[in-house]
Length: 238
Image (tube, rainbow, N blue to C red):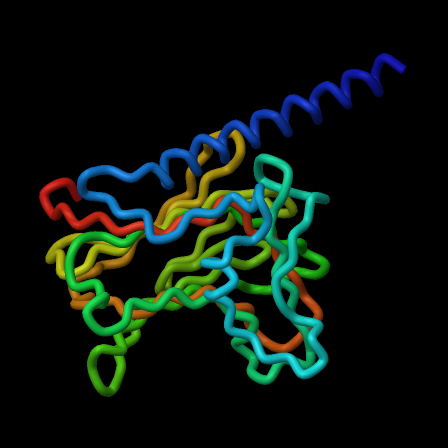
Protein backbone atom coordinates (compact mmCIF):
# COMPACT_ATOMS: atom_id res chain seq x y z
CA UNK A 1 0.00 0.00 0.00
CA UNK A 2 2.79 2.41 0.91
CA UNK A 3 4.68 1.66 -2.33
CA UNK A 4 1.50 2.19 -4.34
CA UNK A 5 0.87 5.53 -2.66
CA UNK A 6 4.45 6.67 -3.30
CA UNK A 7 4.21 5.63 -6.95
CA UNK A 8 0.96 7.55 -7.38
CA UNK A 9 2.48 10.58 -5.67
CA UNK A 10 5.50 10.53 -7.98
CA UNK A 11 3.26 10.15 -11.03
CA UNK A 12 1.07 13.05 -9.89
CA UNK A 13 4.12 15.23 -9.22
CA UNK A 14 5.60 14.45 -12.64
CA UNK A 15 2.28 15.24 -14.33
CA UNK A 16 2.00 18.57 -12.49
CA UNK A 17 5.59 19.45 -13.38
CA UNK A 18 4.93 18.73 -17.05
CA UNK A 19 1.75 20.81 -17.08
CA UNK A 20 3.48 23.75 -15.42
CA UNK A 21 6.40 23.58 -17.88
CA UNK A 22 4.25 23.45 -21.00
CA UNK A 23 1.74 26.00 -19.74
CA UNK A 24 4.54 28.49 -19.06
CA UNK A 25 6.02 27.92 -22.51
CA UNK A 26 2.60 28.49 -24.10
CA UNK A 27 2.04 31.73 -22.21
CA UNK A 28 5.49 32.97 -23.19
CA UNK A 29 5.03 32.11 -26.87
CA UNK A 30 1.50 33.53 -27.11
CA UNK A 31 2.21 36.89 -25.46
CA UNK A 32 2.40 39.71 -28.04
CA UNK A 33 4.72 42.70 -27.83
CA UNK A 34 5.42 45.88 -29.79
CA UNK A 35 7.47 43.84 -32.27
CA UNK A 36 5.80 40.42 -32.00
CA UNK A 37 2.55 39.63 -33.78
CA UNK A 38 0.66 36.51 -32.74
CA UNK A 39 -0.64 34.94 -35.94
CA UNK A 40 -2.32 32.00 -34.25
CA UNK A 41 -2.59 30.70 -30.68
CA UNK A 42 -4.76 27.83 -29.46
CA UNK A 43 -4.51 25.68 -26.33
CA UNK A 44 -7.73 23.82 -27.29
CA UNK A 45 -9.41 24.54 -23.97
CA UNK A 46 -12.49 25.89 -25.77
CA UNK A 47 -12.52 23.40 -28.63
CA UNK A 48 -10.67 23.70 -31.93
CA UNK A 49 -10.60 27.33 -33.05
CA UNK A 50 -11.76 28.18 -36.58
CA UNK A 51 -8.26 29.49 -37.36
CA UNK A 52 -6.81 26.02 -36.70
CA UNK A 53 -9.54 24.23 -38.65
CA UNK A 54 -8.77 26.45 -41.65
CA UNK A 55 -5.17 25.20 -41.60
CA UNK A 56 -6.27 21.62 -42.23
CA UNK A 57 -5.56 20.22 -45.70
CA UNK A 58 -7.01 16.73 -45.87
CA UNK A 59 -8.96 14.82 -48.51
CA UNK A 60 -10.26 11.47 -47.29
CA UNK A 61 -13.24 9.96 -49.18
CA UNK A 62 -14.08 7.80 -46.14
CA UNK A 63 -13.77 10.68 -43.66
CA UNK A 64 -11.48 8.80 -41.28
CA UNK A 65 -8.58 11.29 -41.25
CA UNK A 66 -8.70 14.73 -39.68
CA UNK A 67 -8.77 16.68 -36.42
CA UNK A 68 -10.55 15.91 -33.16
CA UNK A 69 -10.40 17.03 -29.56
CA UNK A 70 -9.23 14.65 -26.83
CA UNK A 71 -9.02 14.83 -23.05
CA UNK A 72 -7.36 11.42 -22.62
CA UNK A 73 -3.89 12.97 -22.89
CA UNK A 74 -2.73 16.60 -22.95
CA UNK A 75 0.36 18.70 -22.32
CA UNK A 76 -1.55 21.09 -20.06
CA UNK A 77 -5.10 22.11 -19.30
CA UNK A 78 -7.97 19.78 -20.14
CA UNK A 79 -7.76 19.11 -23.89
CA UNK A 80 -5.37 18.43 -26.74
CA UNK A 81 -5.64 18.06 -30.51
CA UNK A 82 -5.56 14.61 -32.06
CA UNK A 83 -4.52 14.37 -35.72
CA UNK A 84 -5.69 11.09 -37.24
CA UNK A 85 -4.17 9.67 -40.41
CA UNK A 86 -5.76 7.06 -42.69
CA UNK A 87 -4.92 4.65 -45.50
CA UNK A 88 -7.67 6.32 -47.53
CA UNK A 89 -6.31 9.88 -47.71
CA UNK A 90 -5.88 11.20 -51.25
CA UNK A 91 -2.18 12.07 -50.88
CA UNK A 92 0.63 10.74 -48.69
CA UNK A 93 1.29 14.21 -47.21
CA UNK A 94 -2.20 14.38 -45.69
CA UNK A 95 -3.48 15.35 -43.22
CA UNK A 96 -1.49 18.57 -43.08
CA UNK A 97 -1.70 21.86 -41.21
CA UNK A 98 -0.74 24.61 -43.67
CA UNK A 99 0.03 28.19 -42.64
CA UNK A 100 0.12 30.40 -45.74
CA UNK A 101 1.59 33.89 -46.13
CA UNK A 102 0.32 34.85 -49.56
CA UNK A 103 0.96 37.93 -51.68
CA UNK A 104 1.61 40.99 -49.56
CA UNK A 105 1.62 38.78 -46.44
CA UNK A 106 4.75 36.93 -47.57
CA UNK A 107 7.32 37.15 -44.77
CA UNK A 108 10.47 38.85 -46.07
CA UNK A 109 12.13 39.96 -42.83
CA UNK A 110 12.14 39.36 -39.10
CA UNK A 111 11.76 35.95 -37.46
CA UNK A 112 8.92 33.46 -37.53
CA UNK A 113 8.42 31.26 -34.46
CA UNK A 114 6.40 28.04 -34.40
CA UNK A 115 5.69 26.58 -30.96
CA UNK A 116 3.67 23.50 -30.03
CA UNK A 117 3.63 20.55 -27.66
CA UNK A 118 3.47 17.09 -29.18
CA UNK A 119 3.23 13.41 -28.31
CA UNK A 120 3.90 10.67 -30.84
CA UNK A 121 2.89 7.16 -29.68
CA UNK A 122 5.50 4.58 -30.69
CA UNK A 123 2.89 1.95 -31.55
CA UNK A 124 0.57 4.17 -33.61
CA UNK A 125 2.78 7.18 -34.28
CA UNK A 126 4.46 8.31 -37.46
CA UNK A 127 6.86 11.06 -38.46
CA UNK A 128 5.63 14.65 -38.53
CA UNK A 129 7.31 16.46 -41.40
CA UNK A 130 7.77 20.22 -41.05
CA UNK A 131 8.37 22.07 -44.32
CA UNK A 132 9.19 25.74 -44.92
CA UNK A 133 8.92 27.04 -48.50
CA UNK A 134 8.92 30.17 -50.60
CA UNK A 135 6.21 30.15 -53.28
CA UNK A 136 6.72 33.81 -54.17
CA UNK A 137 9.26 32.71 -56.80
CA UNK A 138 9.07 30.17 -59.63
CA UNK A 139 10.10 27.48 -59.31
CA UNK A 140 9.34 27.57 -55.58
CA UNK A 141 12.17 27.19 -53.07
CA UNK A 142 12.37 24.73 -50.20
CA UNK A 143 13.95 26.70 -47.34
CA UNK A 144 14.42 23.67 -45.09
CA UNK A 145 12.82 20.47 -43.80
CA UNK A 146 12.54 19.11 -40.27
CA UNK A 147 11.13 15.86 -38.91
CA UNK A 148 9.70 14.71 -35.58
CA UNK A 149 9.54 10.94 -35.04
CA UNK A 150 8.56 8.70 -32.10
CA UNK A 151 12.23 8.55 -31.02
CA UNK A 152 13.91 11.78 -32.14
CA UNK A 153 14.05 14.80 -34.43
CA UNK A 154 15.99 16.03 -37.44
CA UNK A 155 16.70 19.50 -38.82
CA UNK A 156 18.41 19.39 -42.19
CA UNK A 157 20.94 16.57 -41.90
CA UNK A 158 21.37 16.72 -38.11
CA UNK A 159 19.45 14.21 -35.98
CA UNK A 160 19.05 13.96 -32.21
CA UNK A 161 17.16 11.61 -29.90
CA UNK A 162 14.63 12.51 -27.23
CA UNK A 163 12.55 10.56 -24.66
CA UNK A 164 9.71 8.48 -26.07
CA UNK A 165 6.04 8.12 -25.15
CA UNK A 166 5.78 11.51 -23.46
CA UNK A 167 4.79 15.10 -24.13
CA UNK A 168 7.53 17.37 -25.47
CA UNK A 169 7.65 21.02 -26.54
CA UNK A 170 8.94 22.03 -29.98
CA UNK A 171 10.11 25.56 -30.75
CA UNK A 172 11.20 26.39 -34.28
CA UNK A 173 12.61 29.86 -34.99
CA UNK A 174 13.09 30.93 -38.61
CA UNK A 175 15.12 34.09 -39.36
CA UNK A 176 14.27 35.64 -42.73
CA UNK A 177 16.93 37.62 -44.61
CA UNK A 178 19.34 37.54 -41.67
CA UNK A 179 22.87 36.83 -42.82
CA UNK A 180 24.81 34.78 -40.29
CA UNK A 181 21.70 33.69 -38.37
CA UNK A 182 20.44 30.13 -37.99
CA UNK A 183 17.14 28.27 -38.00
CA UNK A 184 16.87 26.84 -34.49
CA UNK A 185 14.92 23.78 -33.42
CA UNK A 186 14.57 23.19 -29.68
CA UNK A 187 12.84 20.26 -27.99
CA UNK A 188 12.05 20.77 -24.30
CA UNK A 189 11.18 17.97 -21.88
CA UNK A 190 8.76 18.36 -18.97
CA UNK A 191 11.71 18.63 -16.57
CA UNK A 192 13.21 21.52 -18.54
CA UNK A 193 15.92 19.57 -20.37
CA UNK A 194 16.46 21.08 -23.83
CA UNK A 195 17.69 19.33 -27.00
CA UNK A 196 18.72 21.83 -29.66
CA UNK A 197 20.07 21.91 -33.19
CA UNK A 198 20.66 24.66 -35.76
CA UNK A 199 20.80 25.14 -39.52
CA UNK A 200 22.28 28.11 -41.40
CA UNK A 201 19.51 30.47 -42.55
CA UNK A 202 21.52 32.59 -45.03
CA UNK A 203 19.55 31.26 -48.02
CA UNK A 204 16.10 32.11 -46.57
CA UNK A 205 14.93 35.25 -48.40
CA UNK A 206 11.17 34.82 -47.96
CA UNK A 207 8.62 32.47 -46.39
CA UNK A 208 5.15 31.98 -47.84
CA UNK A 209 4.23 28.55 -46.46
CA UNK A 210 4.93 26.43 -43.37
CA UNK A 211 3.40 22.97 -43.22
CA UNK A 212 3.13 20.25 -40.57
CA UNK A 213 2.38 17.02 -42.40
CA UNK A 214 1.74 13.39 -41.53
CA UNK A 215 3.99 11.21 -43.67
CA UNK A 216 2.61 8.21 -45.60
CA UNK A 217 -0.85 6.67 -45.76
CA UNK A 218 -1.54 4.65 -42.61
CA UNK A 219 -3.68 4.47 -39.47
CA UNK A 220 -1.29 6.48 -37.29
CA UNK A 221 -2.13 9.45 -35.11
CA UNK A 222 -0.30 12.14 -33.15
CA UNK A 223 -1.25 14.66 -30.47
CA UNK A 224 -0.61 18.42 -30.47
CA UNK A 225 -1.26 21.01 -27.79
CA UNK A 226 -0.59 24.72 -27.19
CA UNK A 227 -0.03 25.69 -30.83
CA UNK A 228 1.39 29.19 -31.47
CA UNK A 229 2.66 30.84 -34.66
CA UNK A 230 4.15 34.32 -34.35
CA UNK A 231 6.26 36.84 -36.26
CA UNK A 232 8.81 39.19 -34.77
CA UNK A 233 9.39 42.12 -37.11
CA UNK A 234 12.02 43.92 -35.01
CA UNK A 235 15.34 42.93 -36.56
CA UNK A 236 17.34 44.57 -33.81
CA UNK A 237 15.79 42.34 -31.15
CA UNK A 238 16.49 39.04 -32.88
